[in-house]
Length: 131
Image (tube, rainbow, N blue to C red; front, side, top):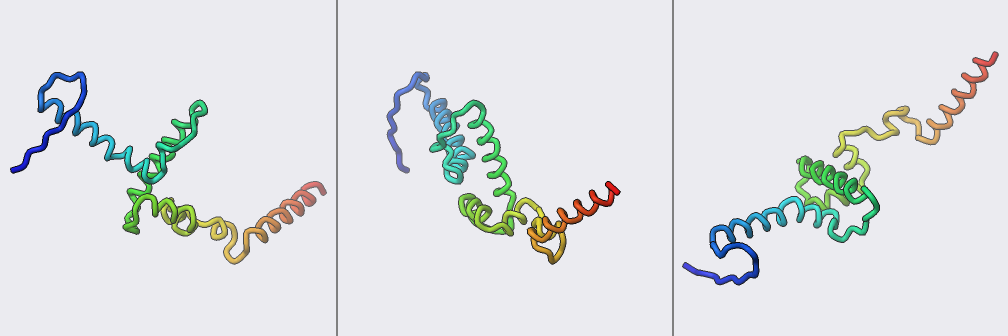
């Protein structure tokens, strides 16, 4: 059996059980979601302080972190999943359960061709409506 001596300064009554519970509660919060957000998104280093922007970004970060946690397709860490989502559109579409725009528009046509086809169709439809 080993024992450790720890010294701290605080305003609590010197009851070992209460101090232990307070310390565990503090580190439970620090090691839980707060640490994950800091590691994955460098939240503590964020310089956003404008009005509600910090709170809004915090909500978006928590949403992203929970999305990464729900992803069971890979066993990567949250920072790696974040990088994959930024660098690999296919992974991002799978993560968010979306279809790429090129598949939605027209199968086989490129997006630029689709835009031009839509414009041409709108112009001809507009001219036909004017007649």
